[in-house]
Length: 305
Image 1 (cartoon, rainbow, N blue to C red):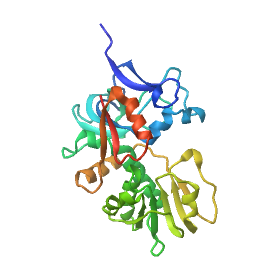
Image 2 (tube, rainbow, N blue to C red; image 1 turned 30 degrees about the vertical axis):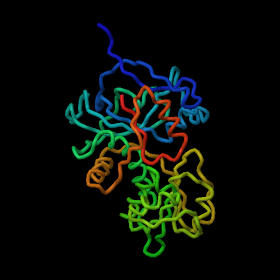
Image 3 (cartoon, helix red, strand yellow; image 1 turned 180 degrees about the vertical axis):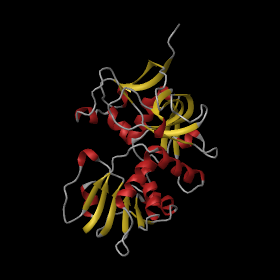
Image 4 (cartoon, helix red, strand yellow; image 1 turned 180 degrees about the horizontal axis):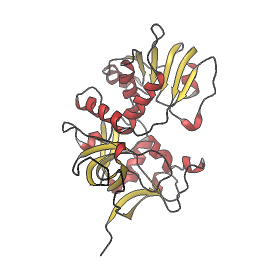
């Protein structure tokens, strides 16, 4: 009997989008507390570009003997469930994988994943749109948790990259915690950013009570925080030194199915955006990565098997 196989996008020797290839791997059965998802769509994120460029290999964070799997976000249908899983086969779900040292990712036809990583996608949300949500919305929610509730008086928060996938979610969710949010973006993005219910700026300025650095500007963004303020960054491998009494945190996103369920419900209600830049076949993953690397993408490029 022939082994059933599934396509996945990988890199063997990472050197940018040109090093991406599609390979066939056996379709495995889910173990305890696992599900196998038939992927309908999977978004391309900046972290994927970093993997293909070998950033995490050079940091000693990847040790795969054959290839490294690509992709974090996904949406699809539960095809099989392991022991202890209550999620019915056929359920529409979305989620993301974390970590870098793995031979599989979401840029594939099938994916084995812990059931706790996923959330059910409401019927009102298309699976292609749902694939753009998990990593960035979860990261944003966990970043806002690090910011915490806004103080009574010092509550001016600047969100860099507010027109991007991560920054837009931070800008919306931080308002729930009482922050008076200003979004930093290019002038052309002003209508979208203001549509999130926040103020708008094209320059960093100074004296902010807090900065959520979704654009990973790093030192310039830190300098924009007032003495004793708060800073949340998004680059764990490049944590900034503490200075001027600023409370600094770096978000390291981790999958959280229940948290994601609430975020997807807000997408379904129109309270959070789910933006698609383009839909590209899985076999053209290298082209999708090149387009992402060129910058200026609003929303996510989504791969479909």
